[in-house]
Length: 221
Image (tube, rainbow, N blue to C red; front, side, top):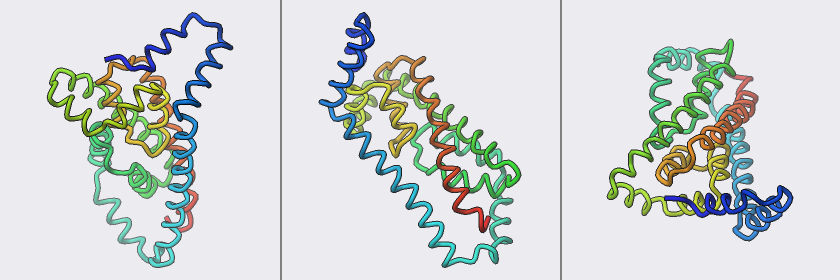
């Protein structure tokens, strides 16, 4: 199943670079990509601001300094191998648990090198996306399952068909379901080498969120 974006890219392959840029710009503008990017960028900003506000509000309600013992018990009560394995599983299937929770856990568990843990979580999420991609490849062997996923995720299929790899980058960076987009990429036979390349932007999302979250909680964790 080839996407319209892939067919369009192939048709432009032999054109001069300047002409390619002009045609892509015109297409993206007409298809609503720039508007979609703007909306999701605003969502990202609001989400980051919301996280900071939530942390600050909770800090006013709960005295975290008095809860250090309870927090430490919670952190110590969860084996790192189990947490990392569970995170990889969630990132491979649905991605239904926000990675930010795991970042906070990682900072509390390993306060000496929190960004190393963020890098590890980013790597696990990247691997989870690869797993999700091959899950999509596997789904193609079961037409009834493929039709079900297409029906339940029609809008995401349309995004991939219109904008190809840009959607993978957006899913890696913005509040889009990265695992599901990765699965759809596998279903539509999106070139794996490009998926691997664009998926690397997942690291940017993790470190960006980490800077914001760690900056907001540094006074009480």
